[in-house]
Length: 345
Image (cartoon, rainbow, N blue to C red):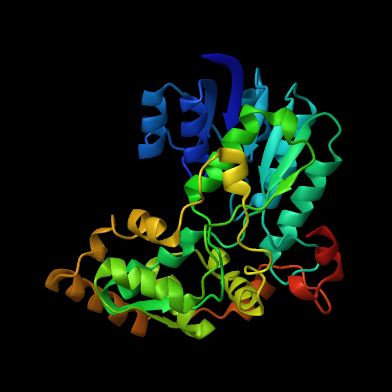
């Protein structure tokens, strides 16, 4: 095994798990930072030989311990506290002997965006760029493919796909693989920024056709009102904080932000494989879900869910954002209208 030890944060998560798994397959020693060691992914990484580090990424004492003896890092800040996590981590990083870090951020990252999450991503990016000791590579994917499958009941049983505009949605696995292969040979990547995309640029209707072909039923892409979107997310149990940002990302999709400069060859050039196509992603993310089966029982469960949505009171996001004290900017910019964003992308 390679003696270089690599830390992967959020190692139970969407991109952290495939990154950690690939690094183990490449022969590296991996320390997997997790909150829950009983999680299925943590148990699997342990079986593959990873060192499981249980801690709180928002506690600098835990981060300092996790960085002890580490040469390289894949850092994944997670919602809703990504700004706190990012600044905590970068302060601990300055005290460490880490040689290279790969930071997962966001394609939209900019200082004047209407989304608080996007503004926080930008602030974390700046903090990492300003640290003086560790070499940095940034991954800034757009809208992830898993987002399209977050509400399987209306999608699989009623053929309703929310229309988020054109996108070349990347798989979690491809993002993790790119991170792992950068950390395999980091000397080629200092100061670089890579956007990971899926194989093809698709309209919402084209995505619906691919999903429908796999499900064996008709699927239609629909532009859902934000009020209805909030009802569906609330009924599905998603946190209001995360749901409050959905509006801005849907609007970005319809303004063309995720189609801009997509797709690309990042996965092919860094990993040496073609990026996952949307059909492959659909089979992996949706068809393994029990709700994908077209059966009477699943139809009944889908109807119960839709009734729950009908009787769910939608969130008042304006009031929520005011109560939470979200930063408010005069004339915030969506990215394709932002001169600052354009210079960096």
